[in-house]
Amino acid sequence: MSTAAVSQVNASVGEPMRQKLAGFARTLRDNGFKVGLAETRDALAILASPAANSAASLRSALRGLFCATHSDWERFDHIFDAFWLGRHLRQARTLAGAPNLAAAPKRQLGEPTPSHGEAGLPDRTERRSDGEGDVAADGRGRREGASRAENLATVDLRHIVDPDEVGRTHALAARLARAMRARLVRREQVRRRGRRLDLRRTIHRNVSHGGTLLDLAWRRRKIKPLRLVLLLDASGSMSLYTAFFVRFLHGVVDAFREAEAFVFHTRLAHVSPSLRDRDVTRAVDKLALMAQGIGGGTRIGESLSTFNRWHARRVINSRTAVMIVSDGYDTGEPAQLGQEMRRLRRHCRRIIWLNPLIGWRDYSPSARGMRAALPYVDLFAPAHNLESLAALEPYLAKI
Image (tube, rainbow, N blue to C red):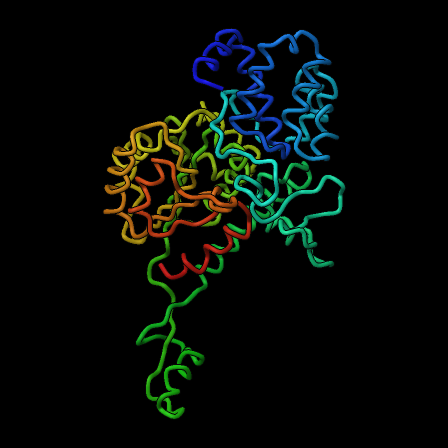
């Protein structure tokens, strides 16, 4: 569709209906449908056509546009009736399993494709609606006897839509944060002098000496604990992951004595005080109130500027690892983001950027904001499931 045609369609469809369509596309994505910019644009043309004059014809037209699999076809009518007609509303809300974010339409992260093996399809696992559990993306079934927790650990968070599984995933996120803290605190480092002999490393060092213990390795606890500062992108494009990471933030702030948490979208909010509430539900409610506007656009550069100017000196020391969780889609100027990343890099020990999109098939950091930030990042890692978060522990232990 040409630019002129798009403008004509936009003019013929009112703003409330465009917002309604954006919300419907978001609901479909929350339920596993592969809906991208192209499909949303074509759906806008359908709303401007005579097909929108009746619910039956609109349902039929949108079903043909949005449904790419048999599972999509079976579920579409139920979701359509709930969203457009208000039927089965309670069931439709539990289908999404996503946080109740602002209604602003989020930017699409990748164009979907209808055939298997192309860009935009699920990365490593895909959810099946027939209740038979998780299946690997290459079609091979998972080994029998795998625990439910293990299954959830490897599933991309955007594919977990069952309310019970969403709840278990949030609980696992908090448990993972506590376990990481416990192991990092207990971990001892190798030193020339210490209070306990590291027998394994001592033997390894002295193999070249024929086994004679000439070079001893000692262990002692870290003198200074690691400090974590987490900045979570809570914009619309991250909405499929936000609820999970809020629980992870709560677990980190609760478990790590030296930790600070911030969320950002169009502005930055310091949320550590609210997350220190032991009641996770109450803590999340406080966070939602503090970060009003959550789910909107993203201004990473401006948010980092606020952080560097008003918070960095207070929360960062020589043992600080700054962890940014974001897809890197920035509506601001890339030059500002690069400048603020350079300022931040001068003050902290490590910058870790966790991007859920790295776990998507054929992803490349092509967004302008992401390219501007990468030169100042020490670790660029995925964060699309529990397994990828757990893999951070060995890296953090070496800091």
